[in-house]
Image (cartoon, rainbow, N blue to C red; front, side, top):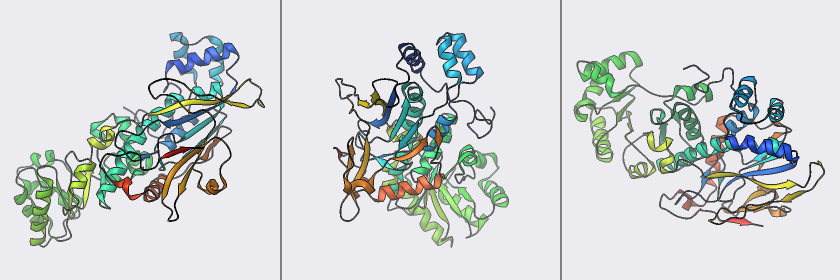
Length: 442
């Protein structure tokens, strides 16, 4: 496996085949019908949040911008489409010149959202916009699900450090994206080196049980690790007997021992016992890190425990039971002809089963109370009320095909922390409930 396979920043491959076949067959039919050039507006939104969730977290915007920029039908891609007979030659010729030249507006990465929030708006010809549907949804649905889980865990942690360590529990490429989304949602570091290399996320890691088992004694293992990594390292103390391991760890490293990690047992009880033992041994500054199938509920249950950091894997990279944001990409307005001056006409899907959509090119704003706390998500298609003019949520991301809103990942992370702090306190509750803000259409 090479760097490109890992999604690392070398010769960036085309993203054009990260799509569904029907995007291309729709394109071919629209080209033949003469409707492909009609100006169109697509919007990304979710009809509902996962059951019991109070808010969503938008993540993956930066990755979407990269994907749009690299959406190119190079000779290899065109050859594959030709060989399979997926589209005809006129369509292949059109695809060979494809470059997205439209505009994209959206919520900035890290912002919170609610049912109906138009988190992304893509404008251009029908042909160039429809091709982006699958890759945009693939990124936003995955990353937003991870970020939402991370945010809940971050809130439950109450300021204690969080380590993302789920790489071995998901696809190798998803692991990199998950680490990025978790960082946006409030995690502090990752165990995944590819994520650290690609996105600059702080990386951590010391040893596993295998390292202890390799040595003739636990003391030998601890000595080897301390000699190599220093007294500030983290020693794993639950391979055999925790009490004996903690005593040995302090004897080997001294009171300057950085941390001990507990990966099994009754974490609440064991953490209290280990803290008392460390203090008795004079290692009062030694931290306690806990791992072992944690989720937001387990983290919250440890709030009273003397724990300094949590390592989370499986539950984080699977969205803590909700692995998708359930976002959709819908045509909401289109022109009646290919004339660039033709007015946009609202369009909307009308169907049973709660899958209808609201037509029209939308804006969104967050209404706040006198204390600056959000009280409603307001979505409209007409003029923006003057009192909401400064509270609009969509920002310009792509203009005329050029990305205009790249930002450091730290900016998205800081934005999320601020956005979450601006929600009502009930947003932090882990008990099931309705979205903390209602969505109002005007």
